[in-house]
Amino acid sequence: MSRLTITLSETRYRALKEASAKRDKTIGQLIDESLEQYGIKTRDEAADLVRKARAHSGLTEPQAIAAATAEVRAARRA
Image (cartoon, rainbow, N blue to C red; front, top):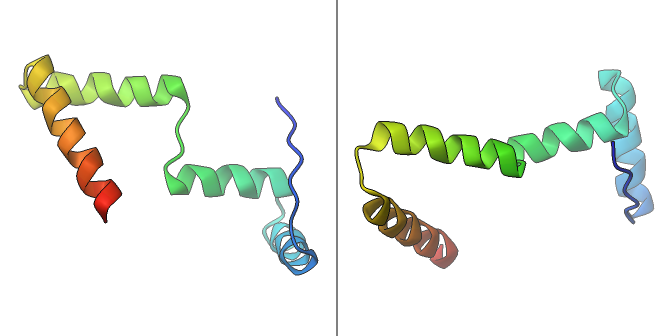
């Protein structure tokens, strides 16, 4: 497992430490869960999602790329 150093305000750090104690989890576990809820995926998880989507979409690869590109552009404009 990798290690990471981050800088937080003192109040944010205290709130995170308090939340981890209340939930009986480490700060690292809370951060990991938060990233999961935010939708941060590993490369393998993302590739698996793409494989599943392709299998169920019925789109050709160029159609799928065009649809994905349009969705990304729309999300970036929002």
